[in-house]
Length: 374
Image (tube, rainbow, N blue to C red):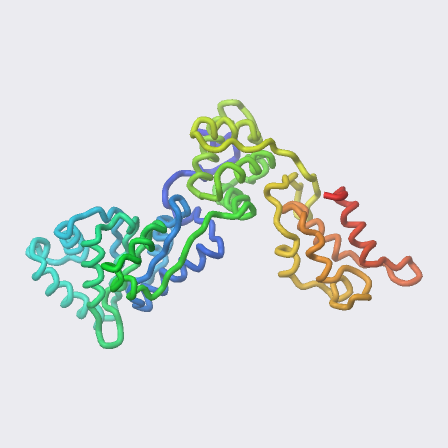
């Protein structure tokens, strides 16, 4: 509906677990690698936990899409089953006999024979359970017993449990301690930081064929950061509805007022009034003004890069900026970072041409961006 108006090939914020639109924070990357390793390395039981809406299901689909051809992964997205229904489900998914679907004893015999046979052929079988916090204690106990299917050196049925943090709390119960002791890998997903929210919005729009600053104003992005709490699902809901409303209003880019209206509709916290901090020119194209809510420390931007010693040196008397000066500029905005980086790479005046001190360089950077005393 709004795709052509905003220069998009497709809708970037659909609430489907599409791995193409998965924004990979360091935590998501670690969890994805853990899932893949847990399955291919036959690590037994792996837990991936995170609050609702942090991208767990999308991560599961991404992990399953990246598995090798010799991996057979069974995915269970709704584990609110009785024990009988659970065994029936596994028997059907694993291609066991009709008798195995109704008899637990027959199921266990056929399952072990099937896993041993496939293991001998080099095929891996894994079970991935989403929304695992909804499993009954009885079903968790059955899962523990299935974990006993193993050879002397490897697990025959690696299991990945994906769920909300209350799953960890439940496993602390004395009755479930034996299952908790079998957890070989555990990872936690957390809400996105403000800079990651900006990256998430920008990446989704880029994949859909657009440019974030042609779609959302900086004030709108700040408002999204303030109201969504870093939860990817909230971000998608707000952004998609903002695109619908913006299209109806013929508004491009979308303003913070549209975001506030969406928040009222969904009873989300209303964003504070957005104020612009700076408008800059970024080296690789027109810049966007970015407000204070989406700032990140300059150290995270610059300390990870390598600069010539003439620009940043460990020598306290050297001309130019030292790495020790980096924490001084903690108010750098995301859009200012490339421009400051470019400015710092400019040749410094030398003797005879008016040597520039470190203090002078800092003053020049601040003046360039009208930082003042902020």
